[in-house]
Length: 481
Image (cartoon, rainbow, N blue to C red):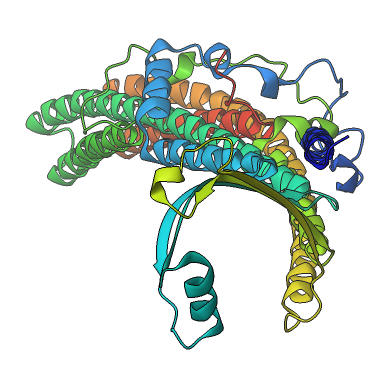
C-alpha cells in the first residue's frame, strides 16, 4: 500500500468518525418536566364543592364560553389587533431565530478563502540567499484557494444544553402570548359587562325620572288647589332633578367605556351597539374547576415559569461544560501553487489538512466559575418564582370561587329587597293620590327603589366579573379552537 493510499484511508476513516459523532451529538432530547418542583397541592380548592378531574371550564375555548356574538367580535378583534399581542408575536419570531441559531451550533463552520502573496526577502538573509541559489530569482509568489471547516465536538453537552435552553426560551414566548391572550380576553369581557351595566343604570335612571315626573305632576295639581305647600313642590322638584342628573353621568361613562373597549380591541373610539342586556347574561350553573393540579398544565403563566426553570437548568449545565476541555477538529482543502499559471494544474496543486486540538481552560480570572455560580443562583430563583406562581394561581381560583358564592347570595338578597321596594313605591303613590301618605313618604320610597335597582345591577356585574376571573384563573381563553 502506497503512502498516498494509506493517507486517503486515514482521511476517510476520520471523516466517517466525525460524521458519526456529529449525528450522535445532534440528537435532541425532550425537555425535562419540572412539575415535581411545584409545592404540594391539595385535592381541591378552598370553598370548592366536590372536585372532579374530568370537568374544568379552563379547558373550554373562549368562543364556546362567551356566547354573545358582539362580545366574540370584540375579543377576536383584540386578539388580532391589540398591540400587546402584536409585541408578543414579535417576541416569538425573535425567539424562533434564536432557536434556529442554537440548533446550528451542532454544525461545523465553513470558510472560503482566496489569497495571493508575493515575498521579496533581503538578499543578505538566509531566505534571500536560498531563493537566489535555487530559483535564480529574488521573490517568490504563492496563490491559494481553500475551504476550511471547523467543528467542536459536544463532549460535555455544552451545545446540547444551549439548544435546550433556547428551546425552553422559545416555548416561554409561546406561553407569554397565551398569558397576554387570557388577560386580554378577560379585560374585554369585563369591560363589555361594565358597559352593559352602565346601559342598565342609565335605563334605571330614566325610568326613575319618569316616575318622578309623574309625582311632580300630581304635586303641582295639589299645590294649585292648595292641598300642599310650596316647600313640598320644591322638594319634589329637587328630587326629580337629582334623578335627572344621573343620566348625563351614566351617558358619559358609557361613552368612555365604549372608547376603552374599542382601544383595547385595537380600534379607534366608536359606538358599540348590542341588543344584549345585563339581566339576560347567563353562565352555566356548574362552573367546574377541576383539581388544583390542573393549574400546572392549564395556566400559561405557570407553564412559563416552569419553562424558565428548565431554561436556567440548561444554562447552568452549559456554563459548567465550558470549564471542561474542548475538542475542535479542523480541516482545510484547496489548491496551492507558486505560479498563477499552475494554480489549476490538477491534481498536482491540490492540498489538504486535518487537525484536532484539545483546549482546557486553566486561568480566566474566575470568569467561567462566576458564570456557573450565577447560573446556579438564577436557577434557584426561577424555582422559587415557579412555586410562587402555582400558589398565586391557586389563590386566584379560591378568591374567584368565594366571590361568586357570596355575590350570588348578595344578589338574591338585593333582588328580594328591590321587589319589596317596588311594591312599597306603588303603595306610596296610591296612598299619596288619596291623601293618606305625605310627599316625603313618596320621595323616600322612590329614592330607596332607585338605589336598590342601581345596586342590583352593580352586584350582577360584579358576579359576571368574578366568573370571568374564575375562567381566566383556571387558564381559560388561550385556545383558538
